[in-house]
Image: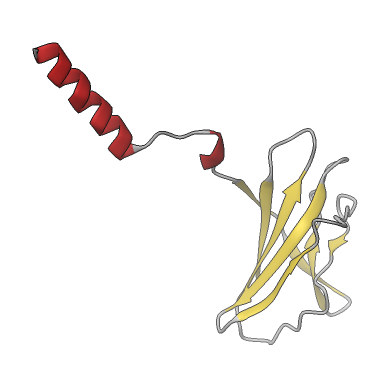
Length: 117
């Protein structure tokens, strides 16, 4: 009888706590530098061969500037070149966060993050 109570309590605790599973993966984040090139912000690409960008999100102190998803036509930018900012306007004195969703057939999905300034 005590073994049954212990089993029921153990199962209830596990159900309440939850367990990490394949749908609960935390996406890794990688920081990448931003430089000023020709008077414009330039997020340097850390992409490796086979990696593609499927979405970009740009946020400022005040609002969301841009949120674009392009799963149907992902893009690749060679390492060391500027990642696209899609004509986002950066106002001096404000802070920005730029995040790119990166996918690959060889590695798990990840985020590339850069801050401006």
